[in-house]
Length: 193
Image 1 (tube, rainbow, N blue to C red):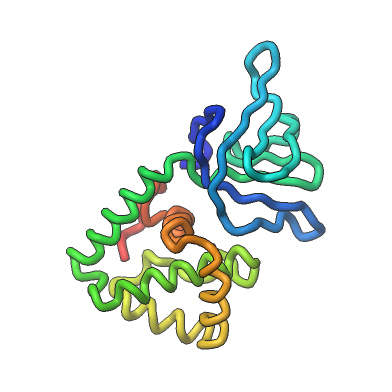
Image 2: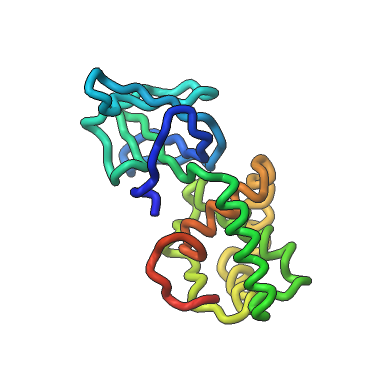
C-alpha cells in the first residue's frame, strides 16, 4: 500500500525519520508534518524535506522501496501515510466492525487502544519487532490476545511502553500500528481477528 502513495508538494503526511547505523535504520515514532518536494528542470523529484522539521535533503539515487522510503547518506525518511483523515475514518470503521461482530467487547475497547499504543512505542524504540511479536490474524477473541500480551511482555514493559506512548496522540499511533499489521490496507487478507 505505501509504495503506491502519490506524493504532492505540501501534502500533510505522517512520517518517520531515522538514522542509519551498524544494525540498519533506527526509526523514530511517527509524527505529522508537511512535505516539501524539490524537482529538477524535467519535473523529476530531486529531493524531499519536511516543512516543520530540520532534516537532510534527499538524493534520488538512494531511494528505496518505491515512493515511501527515501535514504540519503546516514539519514532516512519514511512516509507512513498521506491521508490522515481517510485513515481515521477507516480506523473507526474497523473498530466498529470488531465491536459489531463480537470480536471486541465494548468494555475491552480502552485496553485495546492502550495496547496498540504500547506496541507501537515498543516497536519504535526497537525493543520489539512488529513481524516477530504478535500476529493479530490468529486471534479470534481480543481476550485471548490480551492474555498473550500480558504473558509475553509482562506488567513492567507494558507500563513503560504506555509512558512512552503518551507523548504522541493516541489515534495517530494506533492507526499506524493497524497499518503495519494489515488490519486495514491493501494487503492480502489472512483471516480476521
